[in-house]
Image (tube, rainbow, N blue to C red; front, side):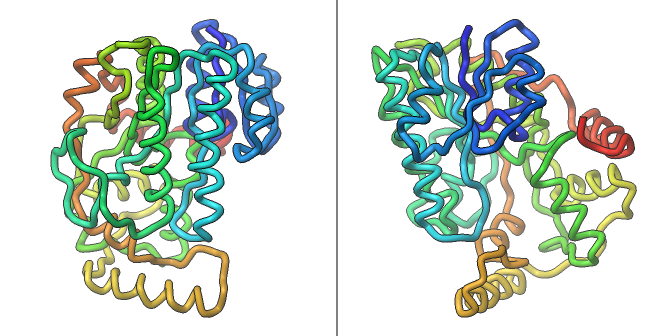
Amino acid sequence: MRALVTGGGGFLGGAIVGRLLARGDTVVSFARGDYPTLAARGVRVMRGDLADPEAVSAAAAGCEVVFHVAALPGVWGPYEAFHRANVLGTLNVLAACRAHGVGRVVYTSTPSVVHAGGDLEDVDESAPYAERFAAHYPATKAEAERAVLAANGPDLATVALRPHLVWGPRDNHLFPRVVARARAGRLRLVGGGLKRIDTVYVDNAADAHLLAADHLKPGAACAGRTYFVTNDDARRQADIINGMLAAAGLPPCERSISPAVAYAAGAVLETVWRVLRRTDEPMMTRFVARQLSTAHHYDISAIKRDLGYAPTVSIDEGLARLKAWFEAGQPA
């Protein structure tokens, strides 16, 4: 199989690339940066912007499946930037697939598209999209996901996966942020970190993507559908955060603030950041406060049934691997 992975140099994208190479597939990576380590492994590395339709089209030429992983994440910044990367970029991927006869698209979405601000406890894919979003990232990912599902048809089969809080070795987002805030003395558990959340170890998330690609074809049970992807092991937020801190050799976080205080702080900081026209991310936003003060765990019966998904790396084993990677000096 010849596969295109957008964001192939990133955390999840890189794990998907590794899985594809391990089973002998031919891989093209499309990203804004240069990744010589991928080229050294036999990956065709193509640089470009998702908002550039010609560059995306060139990357998709000759491919049989596209794993559209690349996106602009984050909770702060102008709407135009998120729309350009997440919506326009996805529309360009779909157009490139149609132009070159690519038959399958596996899209990496996010559970945040259904988060309306309250607890999500054992919800399945029947949960509706949120009517209002507290950040541009989930809003634009929801719009892009709708476009991907609407594109499903006899010539292009599509599926959207919603992995929740992907983590593990080489994590360049969640783990380093938790560690940095703990070292700076700025880490707090919202509401004591008592709410239960799902996460997914990176290798399990990558496996789900390959399973989706292998099962996907016009008329397949997964075609035109969305699936939550987790480790199927919801735990208290405090347990996940402190597990990561332990992997980094740090003591557990014991400081806590109330959800109301966190939300109020987010509202104040957002206002200050806008007035000052700051482009860096505030220490707290209303979206983050809601995420940290609510439960997020999902019923993944559908992906088990339709794709045969089962996480192979447990949270405890994942934390052990994270610790070993951190103690080894990271990257690798």
